[in-house]
Image (cartoon, rainbow, N blue to C red; front, side, top):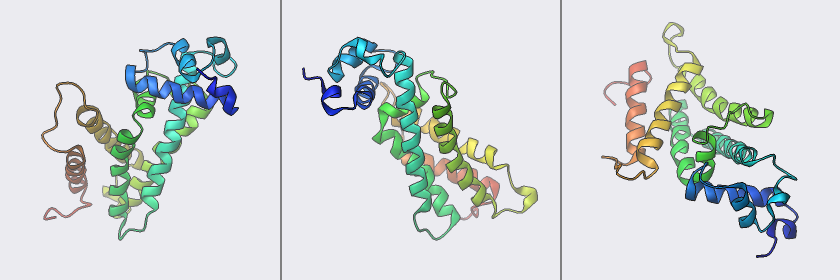
Length: 205
């Protein structure tokens, strides 16, 4: 096998790509650093020029994932829309879209047991992603009277938890698990119920 990482002059990126493929196939704990090196076309010793171990490699995959995730949510929120509600709903839909499009990154981010504080870069990337949703929640909550306005951090945490739950239970294709409805419809309905409870959507809509 050609030493792809050296040939292209970017061994670090080649190793992350290899890890992402292995994470999708075997999970974050189902592969060794030697397997990642072999898939990248280098020796295991070469990995240590860039990463201290498998956990550091997974952490870098997670960091990249959070950056991509934040970019997708920002793009969704900044698309022209008629209202803050439409923009907010677009951000929520981007959660499912990300999980489907980048499964390796998603697993590295949320299922690898890697601490988000493992590195300053990973912590900053995760906070940036959470911040996009929190800002969207803040903007939407301005349509409520101050006395009925939930803290933006709590508001966004509820939506994050709901989105994550739909992905984990119904959008990941887990054996024996079948959603009674498409994941997108489940999430949209759940968010609708939540927003109606806050008074952000009229009850008759």
